[in-house]
Structure formats: structure tokens, C-alpha cells
Amino acid sequence: MLKAALRDSLIYGLATVLSRGMAFFLLPLYTHVLTVSQYGAYDLLITLGALANLTIALEISQGLARHWAEAADANEKRRLASTALFFSLGMYGSWLAVALWFAEPLAAMILGDSEYLSAFRMGVLFIAANGLYLLLLNQFRWQLRSRAYASVSIAYAVLTVCFAVLFCVLLGMKLVGVMLAQFMAAASASLACFYMLRSSYGPLFDTRLLKKMLRFSAPLVPAGFLVFLNLYVNRLALNHFMSLEEVGVFGIASRIAGIAALLIIGIRAALTPLIYENHRRPETPGEIATLFGWFLAFAFPACLFLSAFAREAILVLAKPAYAEAASLVIYLAPAMLMSQMYVFAPGIVIAKKTYWQFWLTLVSATVSVVANLALVPLAGVTGAAIATLASALVFFLGWVWISQRLYPVPYAWSRAVLAMLCFAGLSSLGVWIDASEVALWPAIIAKVLLLLAMVVAVVALKLLPATDLRKLVSSLTGRVRPSSGK
Image 1 (tube, helix red, strand yellow):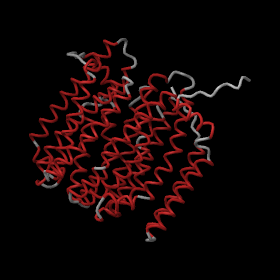
Image 2 (tube, one colour; image 1 turned 180 degrees about the horizontal axis):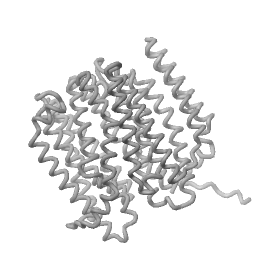
Image 3 (cartoon, one colour; image 1 turned 135 degrees about the vertical axis):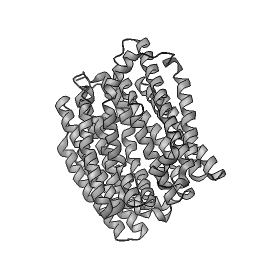
Image 4 (tube, one colour; image 1 turned 30 degrees about the horizontal axis):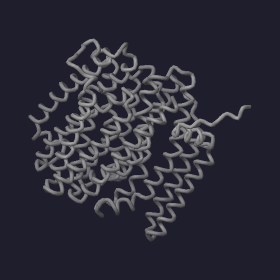
């Protein structure tokens, strides 16, 4: 499993880096085409999309994933995939009709201004198309077709950039153009996915299989809503207590911090189906622990890099109006990672005890809501960032604690905690450097030294020992060391 996880993680990860890299081109485009308030409206529409994708189709994709490997034969797999697709089409179609019918009051309630009505309507079209795209795209994962997943992901990013340039730059459509570009890319990619997966679907709808999938996925919906609160109540609090401008600043910080999530997206995409296939093997827990250590060895330096050089990134990518976003990345980059790191603690999912996800997300969502309500009026965007980090930490630690009782994994916690303390100290020094208003080049040199210190700490703590590094290189290259004959 370890070699397959590394291989597929590399494919998924490279695809994500390439697609996000091309999409990252949109950040300076959007920040120069849109005002800070318009960017805040865009960020709220993306927030609405995240909520819709978590709830509308009742997380049917997760139910499909859980039962795919256990399907008796190819015919049952085809019935599973077709049932999930038709159910999703019905749910998104119904939601789209309601959202368009009540677009005016919904736009006023969510965005706070009727001038964004056209953008809102285009946004709900994008949300429906994107929901279907994600269902179809993930089907490649369940079928272990990592290369197809990668090719479509990259094509989607290229289309988004092309349509954005067309509608926003050439036609000057501003926020409406942004949402139109997103919709066109999602719709085109959905059609491409369906064509490539056409043999996986048919005119089939099995209510027995639907109930089976929903028994697993439906309990995830309340948890999904609570996950949404964890991740996005900060925007709602900022819009309520502050304005769309603060939402825009927070959105830019989240985009930069979100680069950290590139480290785990490929691993999550590859590891989940492999764990479903291999969790009964006695060596699997140790392999998961090894992957977790390797991940942390790259995660801590990556988060430090993002937080230390956030100010310079914003100078290049955005306008001076977004400068305040730089100080938020120190909180948001670790939070982005911790909200996804549950993949390394699979006990809850393996045991099919998904109700624990509900209770854990309820606790962390409560932390998020209370912290945002308390801190945003006092500290604005910084308060929202601190609340986001606190919520992510509660969720991750709670998830690991429960999962360890259901499927123990031998993590090296002492090394991880020491590395975390090193990161906290070094990243705080980076914030101090920015606050001291040191000249640009001396500041960059000092931050590079901080980054090198983090790398030294990771090596010294043996999060990625030399033997594991050789094993990693060997697994990725497919080479096997010859026997010594002893």
C-alpha cells in the first residue's frame, strides 16, 4: 500500500500543484479587476458554494466511496455510480430552481447589496455545475484512475484561467465575469468527466443501493454543515461586524494560506481509497504512521515559508489595500492543514462510526462560533484568524483521540510536538521581523535563515530519517536496493 499511496499521492499532488498554480494566476487578476468589496462578495459566493456542496447531495459521494470497494461485481459498481449520479442531478436541479426563484432576497441577505444580484445568479449556476463536477471527478479516485483525475483537474484550471481572461479582462464583466468563468469551466469539465466515465454509468437507479449509500453519508451532512461553520463562520462574522472589505482581506489571506493544503490534497486523494482496500493488513497502521511523519517533515517548513513571506507575496500578487492579510497567514496556514489532516487517522471511517464526526464537528463549530463572536468585534480579521486556528486544533485533536480507540496508529507524537514548538517560535520571529519594518532584503535574508532553522529542526527530530528518505526515493522511482547476500 505504501508504494501505491506514494505513487498516487505524487500524481494527485502534482496535478493539484499545477492546477492550483494556474488558478493562482487568477489571484492578482481578481484583486486588480475587482474592488476589495467585490472580492469580498466573490469570497462569500465561494463560501456559499462550499456549504452547498457539503449538504445538497447529502454527501452521496462519500457513501459511494465507502461501498465501492465492497461491491460484488462490475454490474453492482455501475449501479452504485449511476444511482449516485442521478440522485445528485435531482438534488442540485431542485436546489438550483429554488435559488434562482428567490435570488433577489437571497442575494440581499447573503451579500448585503442588490447590486450583486446578477453575480449571485451566475454564482448559483456555478455552484450546481461544480457540485456535479466534484462528484464525477471523484469517481476517478474510487476507480483508482489517478492519471485521469489529474488530467481533468488541470484542464479545469486551464479553462478557468482562459474564461476569466475572456470575461473579466477582454469583456470587462468584473464580478459577473468571474462567476461566469467559474460556471463555464465547471460545466465543461463535467461534460469531459462524463464522457471519460461513460462506461461507468447507465440508465440505472437502485433505491436499495441509494438507501445503503445514504445510511453511511446522511450522518455526514450535519457534520458537513458544522465543518462549514468551522471554516467559514469567520467570513459571516466579518461581514456582520465589519464589512465586505474585511471579508476580502481575509479571503486573500486564506488563498495564500491555502497553498499549504497542496501538501495534503494529493495524499488525501490517494490515501482514502487505499485505506479502504488495505486496512485489514497488519502493516497498514505502521505505514500510515510513516506517511504522517513524512508529511509533517514537509508541512512545518511549508507553513513557516508561507507565514514568513506572506508580506512579500501580497506585494507581488495584490494591491496595497490587502496588506493586512499578511499578518493572518501565521494562523491560517496551520489551520488549513489541520482541517484536512484527519485522513491520517482513519479509525472513525473504517469502523463506519460516522456519528463521531458529527459530535466532533459540533464541538469544534461551537468553538469557532463563540471565538469569532468574541474576537472579531475586538480584533477584526486577526480575531477571525485566531478563532479559525483554535477550531481546527480542537477538531484534529478530537478526531485523532477517537480514531486511535477504533484503529490505533503508532504515531511519533513527541517528535511532532517538538517540531510544532519550533515552528511556533520561528514563525513568531517572522512576525516580529515584519513588525520591525526591517528593509526588504535584510528581512528576506533573516526569513531564509528562519526557514533553514526549521529544516534543521525537522532533520534533527528525525521526522524524516535518512532510512525513510531512501525508502521514499526508492518508492517514487520504483527502484529496489539489491540484496547484500547476507
